[in-house]
View 1 (tube, rainbow, N blue to C red):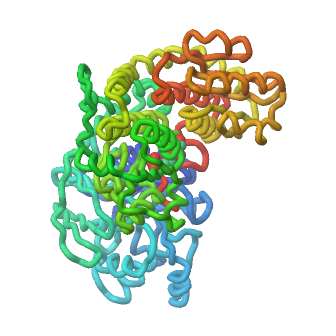
View 2: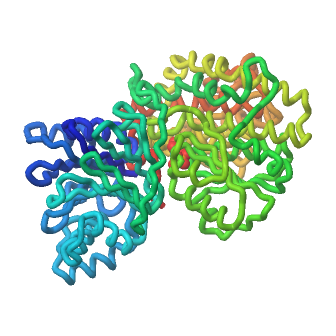
View 3: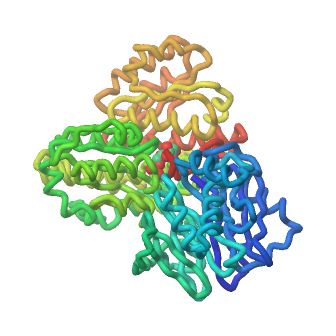
Amino acid sequence: MCGIVGYLGYRDAYPVIIKGLKRLEYRGYDSAGIALIQDKVEVHKSIGRVQDLEQSISDKDKSGNIGIGHTRWATHGSPTNDNAHPHVSNSGLITLVHNGIIENYASIKTHLEVYGYKFYSDTDTEVLVNLIEYVYKTAKVSLEEAVRIALKKIVGAYGIVVISNEEPDRMIVARNGSPLVVGLGDKEFFVASDATPIVEYTDNIVYLNDRQMAIIGDEEFTLKTIENEVVLPEIKKIDLDIEKIEKGGYDHFMLKEIFEQVSSIHDTLRGRVAIDGKEITLGGISSVIPQFVKAKRILIIGCGTSWHAGLVGEYMFEEFARIPVEVEYASEFRYRNPVINDDDIVLAISQSGETADTLAAIKMAKEKGATVLGICNVVGSSIPRETDSGVYTHAGPEIGVASTKAFTAQVTVLAMMSLLVGFKKGTLSSELYQELIVDLQSLPEKVKAILDKEEQIKELAKEYKDVSNAIYLGRGYQYPVALEGALKLKEISYIHAEGYPAAEMKHGPIALIDENMPVFFIATQDVYYEKVVSNIREVAARKGHVIALVTEGDNLVSEIAERVIEIPSIHESLAPLLTVIPWQLISYHIAVMRGCNVDMPRNLAKSVTVE
Ligand code: F6R
């Protein structure tokens, strides 16, 4: 939610900031803006994307070695020029960019209005910038001190970068709840919401923690707490491949990421399931395996696609480790006063590692004494730093807003975890453990076999691209895949879609079936196969259009369904890793055919750092 970039050094700040904002557009693309320190601070803004901003200022002076930029996902106020960042204080003295939400902005605004402050936007950010100016002027303190005093008065989440006309050689950076990293170059500094805008300049990164501030000036970098205590910065080396954050010949990041699943699943398994080995090793959680084995319950929390991965994990842990599992939306869990016992394990799943609801749920579970583990993709993000231990997914950067390779990597980790715990606990036989390890190793090749069917899937997308509604049905391990298929379709093509357990159809959704309704079934070989085939017959009898995923060699379903896509055979617990892929591809092609912006669907952002 909103991307921030800042630069201070010897280069022209403008190209560094614009390129960085483009990398962060996945965080929001309602408007973009930039402020450059020239004789005084010059601000340019535009509604729409970063490229719209670039065009709108093509003839303007863009010189300056210090600057800040912002790409917005609207929270307070619609996407207008006035609401776009950077925001400037009333006298033009202070300029800032902000990611987050100031919860008590209304009362501060009223207070400032008494002192004659005027507000020209609907944003909470404009209140913050004026509060800093008010403190700066009335307390007659430095910019750093004014920011510190102002931040102590606000309630809410922020990642901010502040510059001023009166101290034109520095930037003040602060974080609480919204991510910010600082890149340390040679006589230059970079600030960003994540490391992707920075990697091509330096691999020395400092992740700001909550309630920390950085004071950045000419060859100066000081890290402090909001309470003004100096903190020794922990400089991390990041290993992020530039190619992985660019499109690499694909039309969209989403398609690239769908195709990357051959390697991302392989990378997730690498070093954990040895090629010729018969063991699973998960270093990140080895110390908590005894706790897992004794656990009376596992609580899995996440949002959206990560929550769907958690549902697959529920089936896995219950089957292999015989531990009861509850899967909760983090947003519900955090406010529900849930019962958490000492011998429960809380497992948080998140691609970005920054989802506000998941973070809040983790903090709450920790306060209640739970052991909290994470399954995350973004190394060094807030969730891995907040959890007791965990396992990274190693899917590589996921830029497309719709999650694809992160889902399969999360399910791969859940498979490894549940198999390992089940084996150690003795609830999973050595034979099945070995068999499933072999199946895990076969995944990349089977994923490739499905991706090879892209043309067939594209043809199918052509037939159904104009529908207004769709239903996705699956049972057991495939029920979460039905939910995920529906989510993918609705979020990028704006077609209304619902996922259900197939057997639930008769309890209501069947009323929707008519000659206009496509129903996407998962009818692979598992214990539910016969029953799902009956559901397919019921839909066909009502003239619904059946599109079905079946296991290779299935001859029955093709007699009833309009279209079938064959999936390589695999143990049913791992089949979601294969069946989700045709649904990703169908959604992608339908969305492209409908002219939708698949990488940046309307109203969405990749990293949901607000409630
Ligand atoms: C859907 C999607 C979202 C995310 C959700 C959680 O394609 O991407 O539903 O899964 O916002 O995000 P993370 O996994 O970053 O916590």
